[in-house]
Image (cartoon, rainbow, N blue to C red; front, side, top):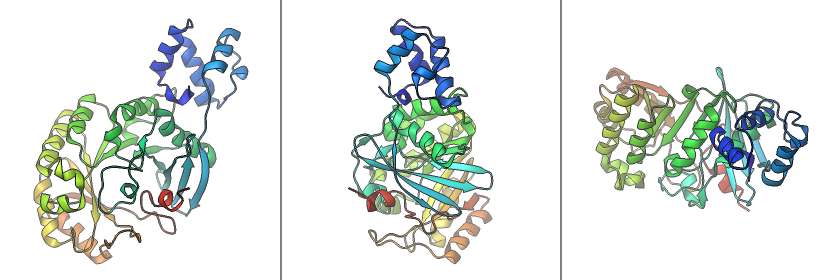
Length: 338
């Protein structure tokens, strides 16, 4: 079993079930997460019996770094799993620190018509260790601490909800990765039942919703998930989340030329979000050869932004960090399939 497949509570239970002490879990976690010691023989405060048990039953499988594309603002990692499948992680270099975008699945079944991730269908969910090791692998490769994490990479996090909950436990535990809840963001394309479940967890973790359209007519065309959960249902779930947590929600909105970037769309979006505790993140589209969609020009993006602002909607334009990288989500993986 991979060590990174345990939360603290799960490791405690596992050790107790096998005749060891609850506190042994904390001892092991301190060696691994704080001291970066991966040889059980070097964990000097553990009994010989426990060390032998750990050597027989727990391993430290690592992700293989296949390729790193680097720029001044971001480094994009292509990582290989034990079974040979490949995923992406992206390290973004902000003024306020390093933020890592992690994947939650191998491929994606959501089928958004503009997204490279969905071009390669879902093979399986990532395990807890495969998500956690994206953080540890990039941190060790860069020899730097990760300051914040966003689950916006390949896959739909809420389609791997149980594992994502366990990941939150590992990431926010001060004895483990130790990133504050407010520095962790989970993104969903709008799986409504899971938004309610996420709200009921009452964590301090941030929520982002990939909306990308102001009405069902447009969203039906560009996001297949909208056939299952209409915008009205998403807004109801959004209201529930805000009422339950009192936390601001990020609305992701990709700017597609001639599709969802008109003045009419901006006014519709303003009306849809009026009075809600949200802010809109306008995303310049990264064009790829696999899709016919085009990026809105800079003037149109600024104009769209100004209309939202004039209607008292908090809005920002995402800083472009892809540059000379395979910038679209899933593009590096798609371009490097074995």
